Amino acid sequence: MKAILAFLAAVLLLPAPLAAQPVSEWTVVTLALDGSWGVGTSEYYGPALASALRKCEAMSGGQSDCGAEVTAVRQGWTLASLCGDHRVLVAAANLTTAIMEAQARQMYLRDLYGDGLPSCSCVMWVDPQGFATASRKPSGTRTSLDK
Figure 1 (cartoon, helix red, strand yellow):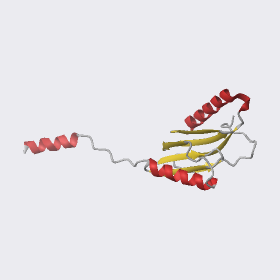
Figure 2 (cartoon, rainbow, N blue to C red):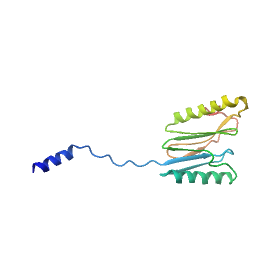
Figure 3 (tube, rainbow, N blue to C red):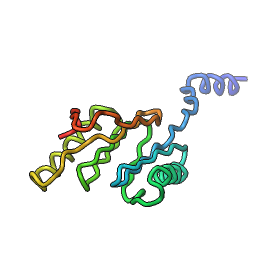
Figure 4 (cartoon, one colour):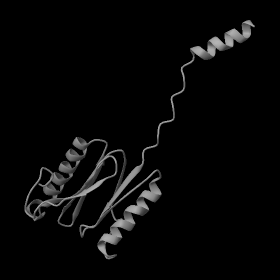
């Protein structure tokens, strides 16, 4: 009887295991130089990538470099910009970090190419739930991401 009570006491004093956490989905984004893009989400990276590539190809009409550059994140932000023939595609856990990384890459390109680099324009962004928003700002309007 003492052994059973000791066992029960030990079991009750052990920390309870945490409930299984839901696995967050991968969000994969690809951006082509012609401005076509695709977003795919899935529990697994492969299907998310395949979905992003299919959507980008459909947007471009099959005549682009979809898949030449991709980014992936779990529950994070993705920002996509074009600076002439240069892509700026970043993913980060929070929006502030994503904006700072995008600005840093744009500044690097500006330092590298100087005045020969066309102005950068935000093409789209994806929130942590995988919802994409295309930039619909009028041509020539600049945002904090455009340098």
